Length: 372
Ligand SMILES: [Zn+2]
Image (cartoon, rainbow, N blue to C red):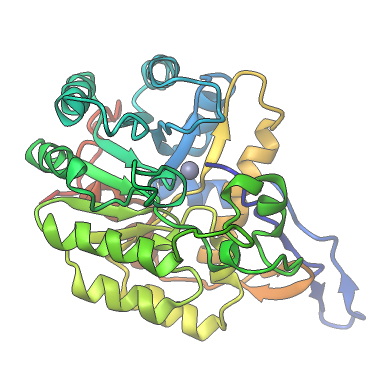
């Protein structure tokens, strides 16, 4: 879910024209310029991590940006929105989106100990697949919140979920796994952390200081076990697979598990804090396994305006596609200026490959990406 605020802005750039003193340009922040928008639109980009529950004005933004999204349902216990309501609202967005939005459904993990649980879940998922859902979300309340009768936390590799994973694989759908959280969720409050405000505002998700909670390693071990036990299931780890602070570890996982890829949603600051050459080398090496996503959220009554929503896409794109001088929490960041072929992969082709069907409803019918 939304909560990690992206705060990249273009820093004041200094331009020297022949025969002139340096002139400080005003910082360019916010939505796309017309030239930037043309390049972005040409990518026909895909955001594989969005939570959109009201069509307008979001659909207008999708059309303006030529942007496809995966619209993801999440079952938590504080959104006050049950799965049926979320599904109905998200399907309204899908149907109003002229092919730009596709559904990622979810299931209720809280009722895991009810009789017939897996059968009930798979029946619901299969119904959603018939309605066009192409993926299923597993959220971090598995591993961080829900407990078994014996007091142990329910983990992603609990046998109760096994038939559900088999069903998703059998239908050639993708599992989106947001398991664990950034390292900072287990560490003392640190205002320099990209997640400081999130944990300040979401104390239930903050593991630090809580007694007898699972370690992050334990939760990710269960995720890895899931990957091993389900080699035919495509798993996309949300938020860099919660390995945001250790790219070597993320690389090792991508090397080890061919059925695993990650989205970059809401973890841009971690990428921006890396040395530029390190980041270029990492993205280049894993250019087939990294998928663009934002974690943008929009519902009826959301306070975000269209320029604010657009600015997230614009700022992310400037980091990946240009060598503009950017800024994160007062520190300078230089854009990566990735090659066109790498940009096409992280912004479109990988999404099409890891989420078959995400472009099926493409009104333009311009999908030329082949899926395995
Ligand atoms: Zn999310």
